Image 1 (tube, rainbow, N blue to C red):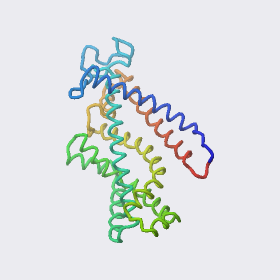
Image 2 (cartoon, rainbow, N blue to C red):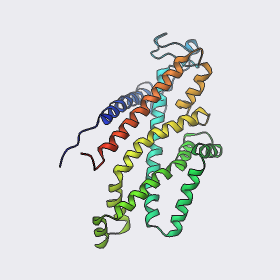
Image 3 (tube, rainbow, N blue to C red):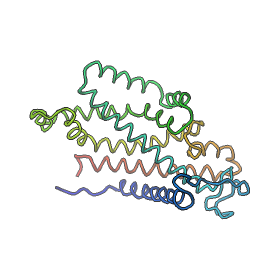
Image 4 (cartoon, rainbow, N blue to C red):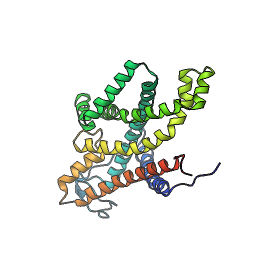
Length: 278
C-alpha cells in the first residue's frame, strides 16, 4: 500500500495546535501543581494598580485587563476552559449523533419520523436561541452550557452518520457479516463505527472550532459558564476599547489562531482521508 504524505494544511494545523496544546499543558501544570493544587488551583489575581497596563510594562508580558489581572494568565485560563468544554461537547454530540444516525436507518418507521422531526426542530430554530432558552432554565454554569450545546449540536453529526451508515450497510462485507449471524450490536460496534469514524473525525475537528465560537458568542451575551470565557472577556474589553485597544486585539488574535489551526487541520484531514486521493 502507498503511504500518503501529510498535506500542508495538516502540517500547519498540527503546528499551530501543538503550540496551543503546549500552552494549555504549561498553564495546567503552573495552576494546579506549581502555584496551586488540585483542590485549590491558582486563579489570576486582581491588582488594580496595574489596571489596563500595556504589554511589556509593569512586569507583564501582555499587559493587564480592566480588573488588573495579567492578560497572559487570563488568556491561559480561558484557553484551558475553552478546550475542555469543546472536547466534552464535541465527543458527546458526536457519540449521540452516531448512535441516532444509525438508529434512524435501522429502527422502525415511527423512530425515523421522530428522528426527522427532532432534527427539523433543531434546524428551524437558531441554535443560539435554543441555547439561550436552555441557559435561562438551567442557570449560568458550565454544566448548563454543556447541556445546551449538546442539545443544539447532535443533529449535525446525526445527519452525517445516517448517510454514512446507509452507505456502509450496503457494502458486501457487512452483508456477509450479517449472513453469518453477527448481532446488530456487535455489527454496529465492530463494523459500522470503524467505517464511518474517519468521516466523523474530520467533522469533529471542524466541530470543535464551532463549539469554541458558539461558547464565545454565549459568553459575549453574558451566558458563559466561566468568568474566563473568551467571549465574556471580549464583552468586557469592548467597554475599554478606546483606553486599552490591545486587550480586544490580543483576545481576538488568540482566538482566531486557535480557530484557524483547527480549520486547517480539519481541511487537511479531509484531503488526507479522501480515498480518491493518493
